[in-house]
Length: 175
Image (cartoon, rainbow, N blue to C red; front, side, top):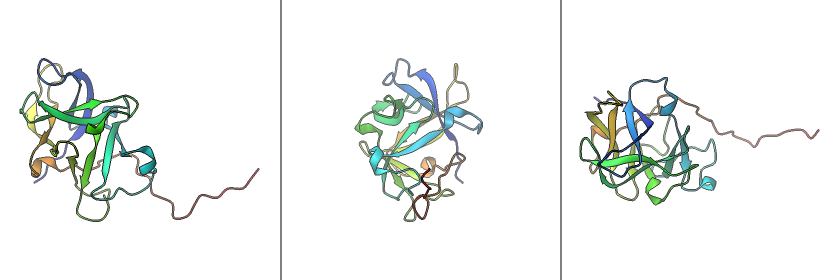
């Protein structure tokens, strides 16, 4: 069976291990505003609001509250020693290590589909296993990158704003 957590960004910097960037963890709670991420294209012009995301498309996941991007790089994660996943950049602008390929079964990422995110630069899969942090973020689970596709790296959009593309351009009357 596949277990889902919400990707959560917290204002705790990685400690003595890792990159020193902001931590990204997994939580079960659905009422936490720190668990909302905006899907963006490789450039803002490549992903218009409401346009379906194609399977195989490169995207950025930008944290709604902070504007930092979901990011990974060649640093070990603090608990599992997999690859660290962090929040990086300012106002949605980071670097080339912020891009993820959406892997799904059809032509487009459908709202109810479980998908994988494969990192463009390092080829790891966004994953969550059972490792939990202690103080000060007790019970939150480590989000990390794993080198192989497995049952730990399926993700599903659980709640949020889903914008349906319009079939025809919006029309309005001049005043």
